[in-house]
Amino acid sequence: MYAVFRKELTDHLNSKRFAILFGLVLLSGIFAIYIASQNIRSEVTPFTELIFLKLFTTSGSNLPAYPFFISLFIPLISIAMGFDAVNSEKNSGNLSRLLSQPIYRDAVINGKFLAGLAVLSIIIVSMIAFVAGLGLRLIGVPPTSEEILRLIAFIVISITYGAFWLALSLLFSVYCDRASTSMLSSLALWIFFFLFTSMIAGAIASAQIPIDQNSSVDLIAKHYELSGMISRVSPSTLYGEATNALLMPELGSLNPAMMLISTVSDGRIFTSLSFSQSLLLVWPQLVSMIALAIACFATSYIKFMRQEIRSM
Image (cartoon, rainbow, N blue to C red; front, side, top):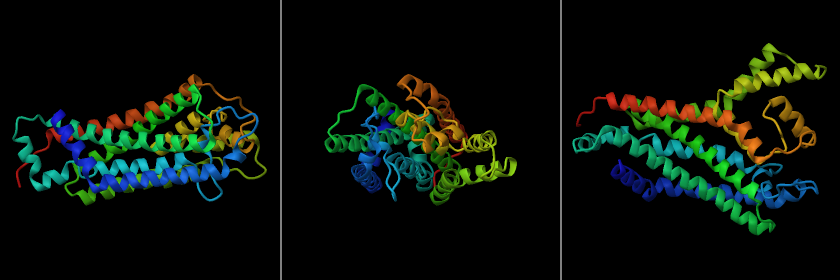
């Protein structure tokens, strides 16, 4: 497995695909620093405790905060590294020649997945370190120990989120004979989760619990609670809630209704959560993403082990 891992890792790092994706990541970091430099003064008050985290949560009038860019690029990077991991080698005949050597099948798929996960981890750590380094020079305020722990947890959750999309693209690569079909299937599912899940959840919540400007607070809370529960089918929603809880501890809750009230009131109705409390808050989201990643990889593993591979 180590030989396959080294070979796949070398192919990823030396490919033009990696250079393009890494360039897009650096560009998103520059955008994040630009947004923070323009708007961070309005976000910081005399009562602000975790100033360094504002680099990652400050948004502009026309540009979103940095977690949005990360949630946008991580699935694309993962899909780009996994959609042709198996079917391209199978169609070219390289996979049959590889398996004719004294290499176990599970070593092939495990090595491919771990190599993609390693490259993804390098990109995520680099992009967050890039923003943190430039932000430190920009604001001149070093991060506290709690902020460093929150950023480390943010990195772990981001890697877990990317592992799901990598396992999903690998699953399509095993099941689909053509790389184009695998890529389009992965992108279609990403678009559905990223764009349409929240719309569908809102439509169902509006049909079940309709609200208007005269609705009671209890009815509005039930409406947003139902919408949030349906939206959690999407890994994008799970990742968004986890990052909000870690990077914005002043929200104090992942209940959609309470988060809405807290956002409107600038978080003044809640006291900021400690790091341990934030971890307890995001633990269900993290476990759910890990379970989804394991389910996708296990399905692709079983299919690959039972698949008939012939030389072309």
